[in-house]
Structures are given as C-alpha cells and as structure tokens.
Length: 488
Image (cartoon, rainbow, N blue to C red; front, side, top):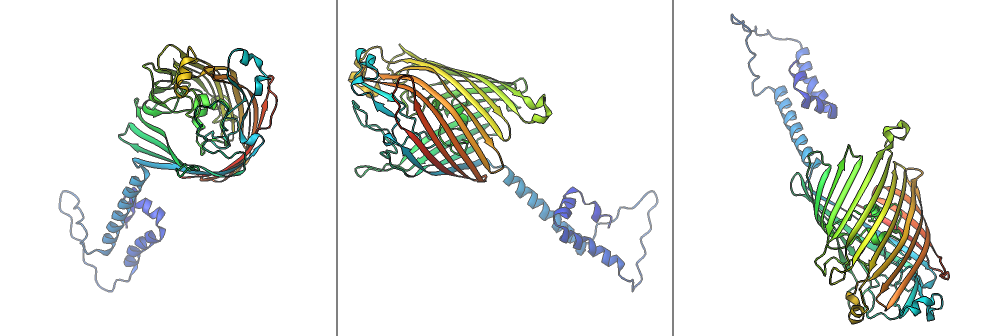
C-alpha cells in the first residue's frame, strides 16, 4: 500500500483525472490484504547483520504492479501527446466576411462633378480640366474600404477598377475570405502571411475574382524578453493606430475611417519595433519602397519607380493606468506621434517628396476603447503637367491634406452586445496634373451595432452619414452596411 501511494506526481495526477480507475487500483491490494488467511503465512526472511535488506522487486506476474506500470506508461504517453498539441510550429487562422449593403443616393458614389465649375470657378481659372467634389471613398461597404460604386468620372483615360460597381443597387456581398498562415522557422524567427480571396463579378467572359497578397513577412525576435523585433518583407506599417484593426475579425465596426487610406497599407521593406522602460515607451521605424497608403488610393505603389526610399517612424508613451488606480486595473492610455517622408510613389525621380505627420490616442480597457487620430500631409505631384498628359497612369498625384482625423468610441455593454460611434473629417485637395482636381471637405458620423454569438461568430451593422461642408453643395451619399464575420 505504501508503494502505491508514493508513486509520484504523475500517478497523483492520474488519480485526480481518472477517479474510477484509481479507486479500482487502490481497492485491489486492500481486498487482498483483508481476505481471511486460510493458509499459513511464510515467515519473513531474517535481516542480515549490519543493516536493512532491500526488498526484492515484485515478481513480474504481480497483477497490482503490472497494472500500476501500465497506468503510469499510459499517463506519460498522454502528457507527451498533450505537450505536442500545446505548441505547434504551424498556425492557421482567418475568416469569412459576408454582408449586405444599401446605398442612399447618388448611385452609391461619394462624389459629384462640379459641372461648368460653377461652385469653384477658381479651379477653372487655374487651368484644371475637370473638378470633382466630395470623397470618392466615403461610401465604403466593408472593412476593405471598397465603395458601393466608383463611377466613371469624365476625362478618365481608362476605366477604373470598380470592384463592386453596384450602380446604387442594394445587395448581398461576400466581402472576402481571408487566410492567415504562420510558421515558426526557429524559436525566434516567425513567418506570417495573409491572403485575401475576393469574389467579384466578371465582364466580357473574364473572371472578376481576384487574390490579394496582403502580408508576407518574417519577424525575428532580437531580445530574450521579446520586446525588440525586426521584420522584413511585405510588412504592416508603423504610422498611427488604425492598421492594428484593419481586418474584419479585428475591427470593432465594419468600415475604415476617412483617413485610413493614408495609414494602413502594407509596405515592402524592413521594420524594427521595441518596447522600453518596462513597456512605457514604444519605438517603431521602417524603411520601405512605398508610403503607408492603401492600394486603392493614388499615393501608393509597391514597386519603386525611383531609387529613393520612404522613412517611417512612430514614438508612443504607454501609461498603465491600472498601476495608479486599482479600480482601473488593466486600463492603458497610449499617446503616439508618427511621421513619414520619402520620394513620391509613381514618380520617376526623387525631385519631390511626400510627407505625413500624425498624432494618435488610445484608451484601452476590457469593455471600452476610445481611439483618436489626426493627420496632415503633402505631395507636390509632377513638377509640370507634361508627364501626366503623356501617361496619366504613371503620373505622381498632388496632395494637400489639411488637418483631418477621427474620434471613435467602442463599448461592449454586455458580453454579447456592443456599440460603436465615430466622428470624422477629411479636408483634402487631390489633383492629377491639370487633368482633374478633387476637392474634399467631408464630415461623417458612423454608428455601429456589434452582436457576438461566440468568439467565432460576430454580426455587425453600420450606418454612414456623409455631409459636405466648406462651400460644397450637399448631396445624398449615405450607406447602410452589415457583415457576418465567421472566424477560425
């Protein structure tokens, strides 16, 4: 009995998780010892002089010892199997994003033409051929930022890639199927990829579906504490905060902000990030081909057409509020500043530079998040109009981005129900040579409801109310949209 009760921690764990088998194992020797002695017991052998005699091992046909050995072996095999399952070099995640949307007004487009340049005659005096008012990406219907319809604005050299092109009709849409695969190359080097499969309508016997290689990067953890890493490949940007929840399964609501087009696009290059002073300071920097603009906007090109590179950086102060107020345990306040500078994407030389500067704020707790970001920027465009007239598709666009930004509140009021409210503004002038100019003075209020059925099933609904200001005549260009996100 004493040997059975002192087999070690593995056996004790087995007794805890297999009480029936343990009870049988313990009961067996008790029953044997309690049986009446019908025959004489053999006398124990005498001890030798000079010390105790070690008890000889039980014979191999001892049923109790054989059972205990079998149970011990099985327990060890189960523990080894669980240890293998607990850590795997390969990880696979992703989601399916299915939704529906209803455009209100202007055939789903977020801009109008200033016919005859009556609202802003100064652009006619400056020599621009066409003037457009509003925000071309303000009628987004999903987390990708795709709009209900881009339209075919006058003066276009070739048709735009209008991925949804609903012409203002309401309908269902499979926004994307995202697949994220990671692999631990070593204990410090991690490969991460993200691919979007996007089903869209084809035309003229051509398939409309396309594949978007979103991320393909390697992270190398430099320090033993894991606070400093370097990345290489097609990496996430370091500018601001909105890139952190750019995917459907990460975003509280559905659509991106009006300034997301400048800050959340993946970049080709190398990046380093470090947390210092017990995570109070966060420093990140990168050298890349392109700016952090999204691919569907005018200010990003993955492959450089010049030898210059874009420098990106962010410095943030992370304040653990819970360390000073116990009732706010787990709450954090993060204040950040970002910058970006480098030759213009699409430009064939390094004569002109693009720059962006921004401030951001995050208040994070378990059930409440407050996020805000402000940004300014400039790109000179081509020095003369000649390159744009020769080949507008490879012309550098001009940008004057005045102070723009958003404030967003995300709150989970119960474990399954949450609400989002975002107020935002974009004040920008975008021009392609003298061919065309877009004047945006857009204010938007976005409200969303989030219903969590399980960690893998989330239903979201959102309404975007767009409003023009600053002398632009108001036109209706609002959107209702929804998303059922099935994550794995």
